[in-house]
Amino acid sequence: MADQLIRATAAEGGIRAVGVITTRLTEEARRRHQLSSEATAALGRTMSAGLLLASNMKREGSRVNVRIKGNGPLGGILVDAGLDGTVRGYVDNPAVELPLNERGKLDVGGVVGRDGYLYVVRDVGYGYPYSSTVELVSGEIGDDITHYLVSSEQTPSAVLLGVLVGTQGVKASGGLLLQILPKAARDEALVQTLEERAQLIQQSGFTSLLHEGKTLAEIFQQLLGDMSLVILPEVQMVRFHCGCSFDRVLGALKMLGEAELRDMIEKDNGAEATCHFCGEVYHASSDELAQLIEDLRAESV
Ligand SMILES: [Zn+2]
Image (cartoon, rainbow, N blue to C red):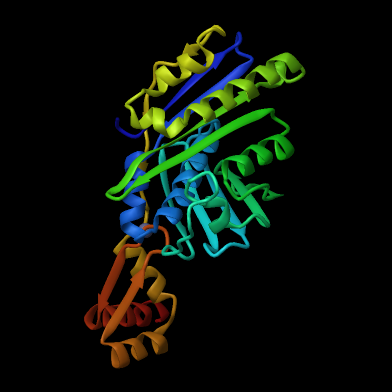
């Protein structure tokens, strides 16, 4: 199944549902950053969450940054996701490993850490990003994003995130977001039904369903099929994408100024820069650095 995002409504528009498959893009992140299984699961879940959060923004070009900083050995996680379906991200310590947890699963809460913060920054492109911070609940990420939506955005929500990692890489990755819309937010029976349904899907193993080849539409059917479910026809493709480029790297090098550039030419015979977000390595030769010095001189005249 190609990576994709679909939207649906249920309960006469009282429930908004979004599902995303991120198997390939999580595998791409694993390869790019040489992530351990635990780091793959943590970053994959956070990338799915970023895409789900970005999916309800309205204005073209809107983006969401999700930063998780727990007290575990993974360090921080940073994800940047757009309404356009692009996402990128990294973790501080990609090689971290821990034994499986008591349920026999990858110990995401253990590597992330249970004490710390989740920061969400929504940028709709007006230059005034809206940010909020909540404390981590479990470090498992799904619970933490749910807590953020309920406490910060006052929207009754359920978030399921999962990554299935095998010896050959990512077997399945994705997420589901279910929200009660404001007009139905006081409908306590509906809120309760939603929580029960989310638990059911969690018990049957959301990523296992994806791995078995179930489509998002089939999973929505299973979850909300008896609640006047309407699946929107648009299937949005999602992918790992980073906007970095050699030109941007040169631009950043140029800002260092002539003395620093000269030093790089003499000591290192060039410069090397790695993009945090995607792991791409850029090399600038001595000649290219010399050209930057010439540009700087020409600009200062
Ligand atoms: Zn990059």
